[in-house]
Image (cartoon, rainbow, N blue to C red):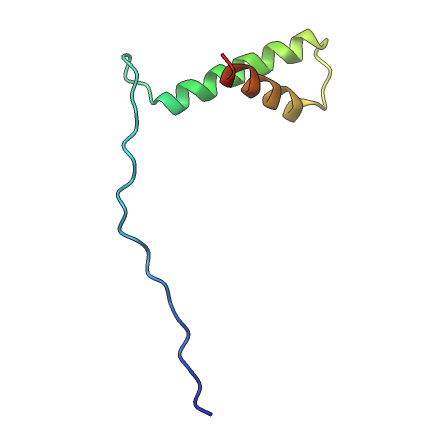
Length: 68
């Protein structure tokens, strides 16, 4: 039985989506991430600055901002 050559996929030639930029020239995804970071830090402070819940703080902040 003859062996078959492996199928090699080539990368697609899709165009990358254009970045949305705010009025001040900052990338909107960077701006969004910065808002989450700030809110997560506020949550951390509200919890009495106890370590060990950084992921929970981040996810809570993300949820709050997405629901606004």
